[in-house]
Length: 197
Length: 197
DNA sequence: CCTCTATCGCAAGGCGTCTTGCCTTTGGGG
DNA sequence: CCCCAAAGGCAAGACGCCTTGCGATAGAGG
Image (spheres, chains in turn blue, green, brown, cyan):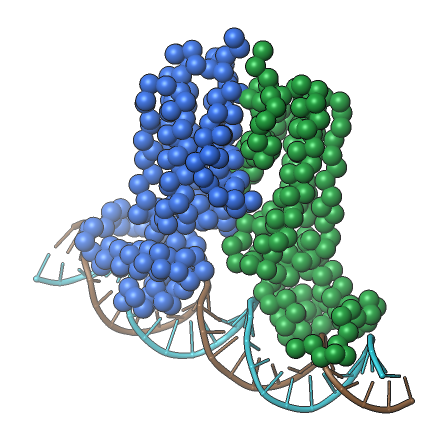
């Protein structure tokens, strides 16, 4: 239990912070070299010049460690496209996501998100998707003002219709994410949400 | 190398077949009780009355074993709905898939399909999705004859648009798969592929 | 029925994960 | 500047995954 003298925030340059930085850096290195399967706590501890038990005590499992390391390196801010037209905005959103998941860290993050045993990070997942959904919703709201789609649509549903096929290919059917495919999805969604003439 | 006397097919009631059946049965039991994480080769071998090394020699990793056990139990035949209208056919397809992935074995299969380290089963995955896609394509072809959708659309794309949001919710955002959602997807896709009036 | 080989049982062992109890070090607060 | 709690280092060890060499056995073909 943290006594009354227990500091809430340690000095950012202290030993703990150094250890944390060294371990996270080593983790990202290993991750980028060999992927999730190559992740070994012993290896990381050695590279970071830290004892194994320190890693275990702080992070528990290597997946917690990997997630924290990746999140630490990943800027999750999503740029909200504003090209002036719904079609190009949606395309930018989709292509941006495709580009991200093709990034080494992006793919790592996606793979980690699929694990079931990360109870601690429910919040992180929720925040991640809320963030991305907000970008989609902003784009749709502007399109609505311009009369480019029917009003009253469920933005979440439209967002999922846009992003779903991409993730399905990536994770399940493992077909390539070529331009034709991405643009086809945009056109299909666009047709689905267009106002009745 | 199999000599000239090497039989291609062993007797189906022989020792090997008995071991295989016992191990697969034990595997499914464990899987249904505790999920993928509870899968321990030692445990399975004990339950099946078989030595651990026999399991390792035959299946290698527990994920190969799990996949074979699940595939062995799963009838992957997809019923092709034919209700007379595209809307209800698509709804049946989507609800059927949702029902399958909510099955214990269905969810297990989905989780296993996500693993990257199953090089041996690329073929199985391809066959699985080809099968399901064929059902979707048949439905779309009939709809096309009835003039319920624009001709010349990429059936694969439409299929992915229908199934993508479901899998995205299930795997990534982990939001519930309620009726409203599923029906919303059907309506959106339907609007997206409808002939221009 | 007999042979012969694929498969299984067995035992020993390497390796990685993760825990735990004890001691040492560090650095924030008084 | 000193004290002391939090964090790290260390060592021992449990446990599960997976491999391997060898001997035993069952069952398919002759």
